[in-house]
Image (cartoon, rainbow, N blue to C red; front, side, top):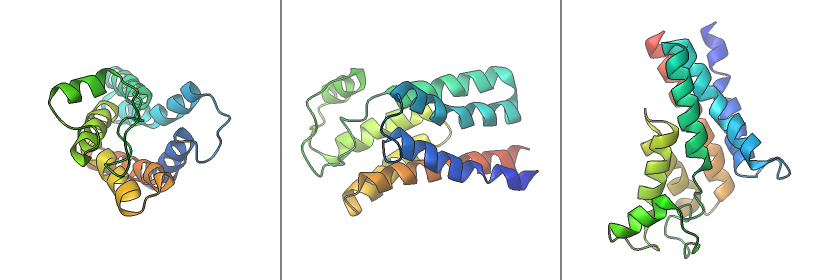
Length: 160
């Protein structure tokens, strides 16, 4: 049965590529966020039961809904002027909008809300590699999914 868990890695990779619009741009954004949140709920159910599954699913859905259009550039180009609550909080900390720190903090908080067990590291790392090193947002979305999938599989293997 454990070998089936490894299917979470390609599922998450494809889900986050879909989330970023790299696979099918005509899919409703809320449906894409739902698809991204499903594996977190599944792993929560398998490891801790329904209450934690529901919490993890809701957190992943909310995290997927936080607009990262403010943070994805990793300092490589000027950030969009759109604001959301997270952008406003980071701005009040005195961090410049065109800095890499701005992007890392924004993606880190978004990642923590999506995946409190490691998303604060994996999401900024995926975007740093994708946009800063390779200048490719598609790669960042694929890496996000791969990192989340690997983390979910590790959680299953360690707990079950």
